[in-house]
Image (tube, rainbow over all chains, first blue to last red; front, top):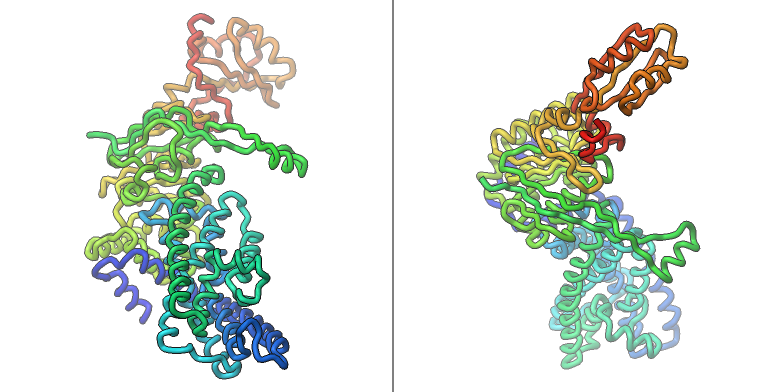
Length: 279
Length: 346
């Protein structure tokens, strides 16, 4: 009876919703349909957090700080970094690639939609479910058992949230760009794995940027990937403030705009390649 | 009335990488890539009036799908112009997308894991269909396609026939002007096929929907499309009424001869008897099949000659149907060169 009621409600909807919000909502429903997978993903992610946590604890034995980070800061970093990393999950990227590989991408083309925004909306849908659960799980376990710190201040908490949102969009666009490579390579698993590895290193998920060797630090500091994990965490821990913080936000925002433009351009290019697969 | 779908001198060339076999070939391609140019669509002219229903027929690889992709804005033409509802699809893909709808028999546009009605709602939102119109459209589609019991079911749990019905419904939620159907009845049973054809025909009459159908199922074409366009190797070889294709290409006729004592050695005397024209003679266990060009010799004359030369038990003139012509096109046995030297041979 209830399903009939919702059907009636859906059929009788009075005005069209925003198309991209509606898309995000549908993806959300889809993500819920796979809740077992979602819980698995979250659980697996967390095994990594535990491993890293104990590795760092061993490294800190008898030391007050490493690269200017205290053990309290470091364990906070490790746990939250993984929470952030899970915001745009594995499934978002593989879902994008799957539409290209199976040719379902044509439906993205015969509809009045901007493809890039469509992917963003879909990623958002996945994130609300997968990333949301993951984030809540991380924070609860982290606060209760792993003794992570609260944000340095209310201000840094707000900056953290802002940087987190920009970081989410950045990661989404990077994943989108990588998935577009599928148009050329046709097989994406290897791409996805390498992307995952590179992103985890250069975003500062595994090791904070400050601990990287000099040359890698330079690379990581310029690239947009730091904006995904490292920058929000610097705000959270209060290690970036004043002009430094402003610089970080500026870099994040500039990269976001650049990536958006590149993504749309790359899509247009890829659009011309489709022909080969279409036959 | 001006045409709703038109194309002039439409050309689509693909650059396809030429790779040698094996690893060596792959490496060589990496070092010095070589490409060949394939012309999938070669100077196609189309003109379809609003409300028309046209079948677009041709063997695999003839350029059908490529044409559809050019008309839907998925591909950018290499040369020529194309216009759908006054919009040039590749230049304004989104505007074009609002006017058209595409149904692929082999892939679904329904969201796999969520109830069908959710897909409908999402499509309604994507095309910004206003409330009352949306409700009217969905009610009508549910009624005509009998979708009621399926609305709450996720697409992945539907049978192929049910899925196709839902897919057709989903394609019409935003009341498109032109509907592209790409092999819509593939794999469907007879009853479902009949139902889908009836539905498309009905939408065409009621809504003035323009339909462009590609199908390998001649039943689809015969029932839905008075007009047929045949394409082969990127060229349009026929554009006209379905029935009339026989008049145009039906000059190849067949006489099936049953002989008294089997076919042994019967081909030679038959050939001698009809030596003045070229024809194809095929031996069968019971006799011969003689294929000839009816523009060069009448069937009566062939039968007369054969009856004189051979111990004929039975003769049957095989009728050339549109179906057999399309089948021959598919088998690559039909040459569409209009033989201008027919007169000269005579």
